[in-house]
Length: 91
Image (cartoon, rainbow, N blue to C red):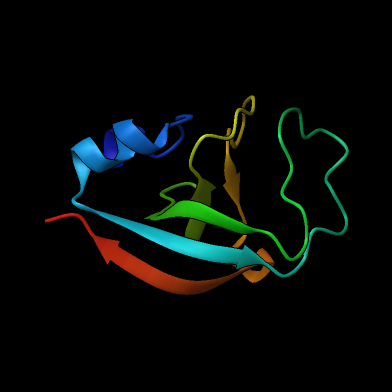
């Protein structure tokens, strides 16, 4: 899935690439970067996500499915902002 490292994916698009959806709760919505353009998670909310290893950052980033954001990170957030709770396999 590396070619989708930095794309805004819908839930339907994400499940075409992998047969599961992770769900995570936002635990830290503070300190929004000044250059972030697009959706921003709300603390305490549950989101469908995809965790993808970032080649440029060298760490796994949490992509919130259905969010829209601009470069450089699109809909990707640092892992400390989320608590992964559940993986649902779609088989």
